[in-house]
Length: 116
Image 1 (spheres, rainbow, N blue to C red):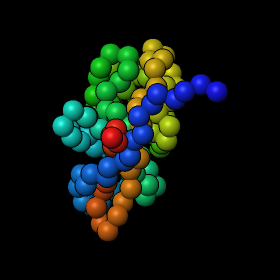
Image 2 (cartoon, rainbow, N blue to C red):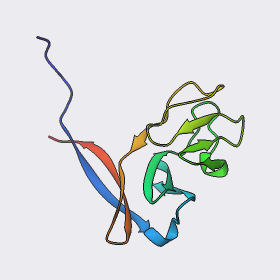
Image 3 (cartoon, rainbow, N blue to C red):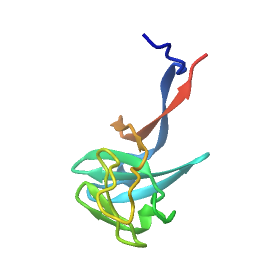
């Protein structure tokens, strides 16, 4: 059995805005310290991923929301917002995904941090 050297982590929920600022069928970029996050309201559920395309560093918030997918404005790569998967070339690297939720009229995104 191998020794697991990973540090334990915990999630910290961060309030990033009001639910009404993100109506169903829309997406918005949020700049949070060192994170640029794209959050989309897909059928009443918030989905959050890194805002930067993994191919050419374009802001995905300038692209097109297509259901639960976002299309990059630069070269047309599409990403699944549910799991961050790169669906089309030229992008081949998946996006980082963040847990998101609507709570008491507020939008929250979770970030992992090391414990200990």
